[in-house]
Length: 227
Image (cartoon, rainbow, N blue to C red; front, side, top):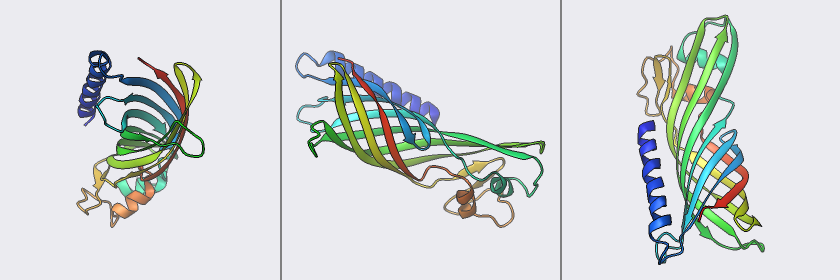
């Protein structure tokens, strides 16, 4: 799946490059890029590329984003019981992250005197990975999942200098529950579990592991005009 994402990013970059270089002689294509940091599936950062006026009379801008966030991944002792065994030895440690990818379409609409205000919505894709390590207990394993989702929000741009904007971004993302994989076990929302422990179900695994689901987003950053 990661290879597919890399291919998609490459194709998107090629499209943006072509738009920015081959068609500006008859259409004023606007291209900018930037970084945003803050709350987004935990605390992290987001790289964005924004392109506007890329199709004649098309009322929306398009924004591609790719981010990395660190978050609380769940309950170590519950994860151990559900994915491995009932041992209790060792000092539990946990860490984890989410790679997220987004494609939004933005519509400009002034509100409350904010002239460069945009409403946006679009699809999401996340790659979640949690690590649970039991120091002294000789157990160390990962729980992973990949999810599709949908997001919407509002974004405001404030000119700092002629080529740089301050950006405030507030939104909400929803991710569809997907199969959780850990050690030699997996739990699926449709009940097609592989090597489940005892009588545990997907509901138990989903409760123990904090894969993305309902996510509020609050980010601040800068955008730089590229053409």
